[in-house]
Length: 205
Image (cartoon, rainbow, N blue to C red; front, side):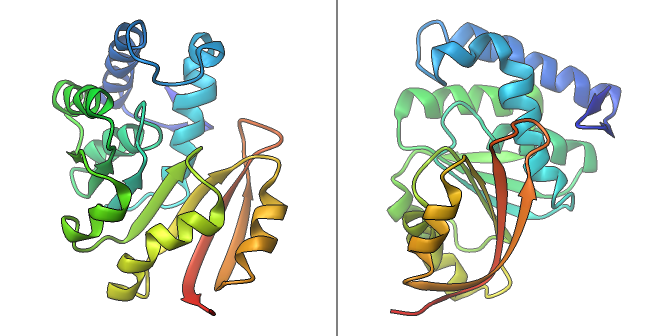
C-alpha cells in the first residue's frame, strides 16, 4: 500500500484500516469531522494527515494539539509504530473524543498517549516535544501562543501546521508578533491547502 506515493508495510496498512473501521463506527454518534467529508475518509483525512508525518519521518516526540477525530495525531502514532520508536502526545479536551482516541491507540497498536486537557494546560503535563502538529484547529497566531511554552524549553522544535487557502493572511497577522523561519509545503491532497513548517520561533512583542 502507498500513502501519497510512499510505501507502507502491510502491518501499517492493517492498522490504518482498523482505524478507519473505528472511525466510521464512532462517527455515527460523535461529530468527529464535518459530516460531508466522512465518505472521503481515506483521501480527505488519512492521506491528508499522513503527509504531515511524511515531512518529518523520524522517531520523534510529537505533541498533537486539538487531536479531535485523530487527525493527524492518530495517523502519526500509527506510522511511528512501524518505526518502533517515537511517541505522540494527543491533546483533546473533549472527553468523548478523548475516549475515541484512547480506543484507537489501544486497538491499532499505535504509539501515543491521550491528554484530556485544554491546550493551555498541556505544557504542565507534556514537558517536552520535538514536533508540534495541528490540523484545522485555530489561526496561526493563536497556535504560536499555544506552542510558546514548549519552544521556551526546546528552541529546536519544529511546527507542522496544516492550513487552508487563507494561510497568507494568517502568516501576515502572525508576523506582527512572532519571528520564525518558514518552509511552505504544498498539500499533495488538497490543491488549496498547505503545510507550514515553522522553526526558530521567537516572540517579537
